[in-house]
Length: 343
Image (cartoon, rainbow, N blue to C red; front, side, top):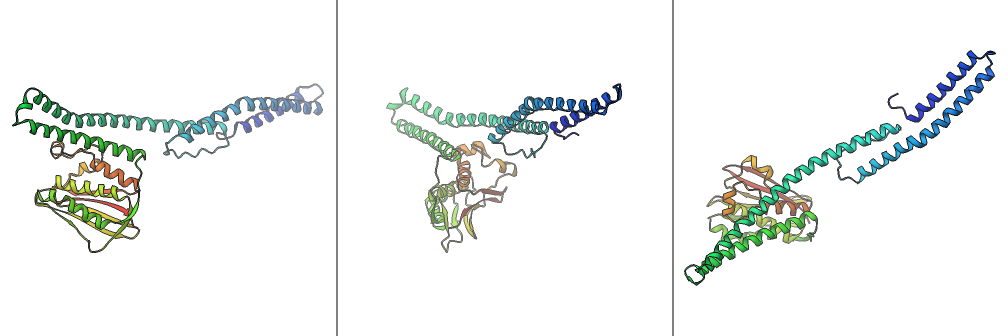
């Protein structure tokens, strides 16, 4: 009886009540008239059905209205984790299921909001920290110049150049933040085209060769004897490869080697950027693509990184419906690997 519809229960109760009244009339009436008992049965049944009609109109309709309200609210929710089967002929059971599902979704939403709040606080703290250093540097240089250093030819030009480098760092941080924001909100449109990813990799290697040579790092493109065409945003994929190569140079060991390997995988093309540098400890790998996350904070800032490069890489590839993975062993090296749609 637990899952029986209230309408069915009311009908059963109405009939049972009518039968009970009819039997009572038949037994306790003086003449024990079957006609009188039957008439009492009909009157009782008719009265019960009238009550049923009003109960259905006033109560069940309100239950259905409330169920539909909760269901519509859930339909508009972005939470797709609830998989309850909410089909039931029992109006009360259906309402209960809808309310349980709604409560579970709200619980999940509250948990997500708590995580977002923590993330927001960390993000604001990171942004303020990243901007504070160049701002204080600029302030120090300007105050020194105003206090008489401007007339001192031994320091005035040097301090102005240092202030300019700090300004450039601030601009880089802001540009990277803007790029991530546009990628996340979909404002930054991807403009795919057909191009040779091998030629693009060679171009990046040539552009970064001077920087790599200063640390004795050798940059090479393997499997470069043939063209491999992909369908993607050439400018953004160049940005991805540049970020990965620059990271390998900044955080790689001196006189090491960084290789770009490109493989034809049928429908997709795999691009790997591998180095034989210091490697990354396993506990850092899950958070490597988070904004401002650094394995070695002090060393990363000394190298001039914003902590946003890998986050940008991840968002660019997600905008292409692709992803990036990383494998690393401390003391052996690191391999970043991503795929692109083959043209």
